[in-house]
Image 1 (cartoon, rainbow, N blue to C red):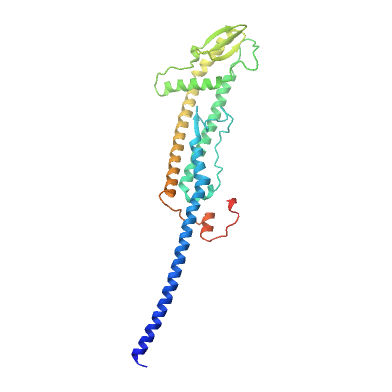
Image 2: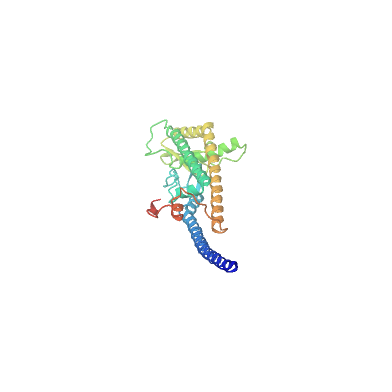
Length: 291
C-alpha cells in the first residue's frame, strides 16, 4: 500500500475521531451550559425566597419601630403606653440561610436588635424609678379619695416635664415648660380639693388644701431632680440614635434587594447553606420547611 493511501486512511481516521470528540464536546458543553443556567435560575429563586421570608418582613419591622418618649417598640405601642410587648425579636423563617449569604448585614441587624432590647430594659428601670418617686408621695392628712389620689396619666406627664427640663438644661435652650408643676393651681371643687395644671389637667385630688399643696411641692422636687433629668435626656437621645440606625439598615436591605432583583446580581454559593446544597446536588431535598 502506497504512502499516499496510508496517509488518506490515517487522515480519515483522525477526522472521524476529531468529529466524534467535537460532537461529544458540544453535547457536554451544551449540558454544562444548561446545568449552569438551571443553577443560576435556582440561585435567583433562592434570593427571592430570602427576600420574601427575611428581607421584606425585616424591612417592615425596622420601619415600624417608633420612639415614644424614649421607649422603642412596634408603632410606638410598647408595654408602658399600649398593649404590645416592647421586646423585639428576629423570628424570621430562613434567617440562618440569610445570615450565611449576608453575614455582615445579619450581624449588623442582630446588633441593633440587641441594642434596642438593652435600651428598653434601661427604660423599664427608669420607669420603675420614676413610679417609685411618685408612689412615695403621701398625703399629710387622711385622704378619702380611692383608689389613687393621682391621675392615671401623671406618670407620662411627669416624663414630659422632665424631658423639657432636661432639654433646657443640657442643650442650653430656654423653651417654656408646657406642664410646669410650679405653675399648677390648687382649687376647691365642692367637697374636694384638686391640683391642676394651668391648662386644667387634673394632677391629684384630696380632701384638704394642705395635701394638694404638699403634692405640688413633691412634684416640683421630681421635676427638678437632676438625676431623673439626666436619665430622661440620655434615654430619649439614645432612642433617636437607635431609630436612625434602623433607618440606615432599612436602606441597606433595600439596596441589597435592588441589586439582586433589578441589577441582576446572583447569590454566591455557600457550602453551609441548606438551599445551596440542594441546588448544587450536595444533598437531597427533604424537610425543606424545617430550615
